[in-house]
Length: 134
Image 1 (cartoon, one colour):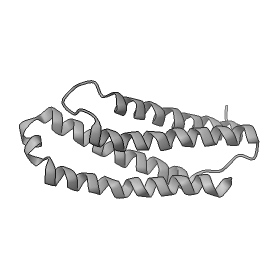
Image 2: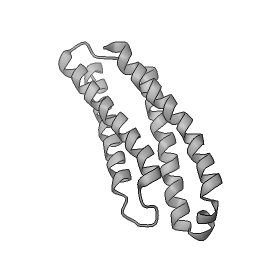
Image 3: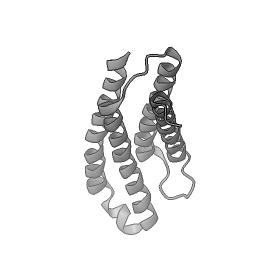
Image 4: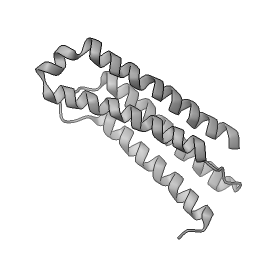
């Protein structure tokens, strides 16, 4: 299970990293008029754009340094944390395209950030417990 989880993070990270400039090109080509008409829309869509980059960097970093724990209980917790991060990335990308950018409520982006927080903190907790840091 060691290599697959690291590989999953690297693949998801690099796929999201490729999607990042594509969403930038999409904004330049299809949303320039809308950006000029509404600052709220422009800031909201750019925030989602940056969330994609942030998600990709989290995955690339984690995929580069992840050490799988031998104990099944902690290894399963690592898998759950990774699943939360992958779900977060999928939601961030989906939110870029489907979530309303003119309203203040953005539930898909909020859920994505909560999942990213939970996955990152869980990975951190597991790593510190394994290293004996209290």
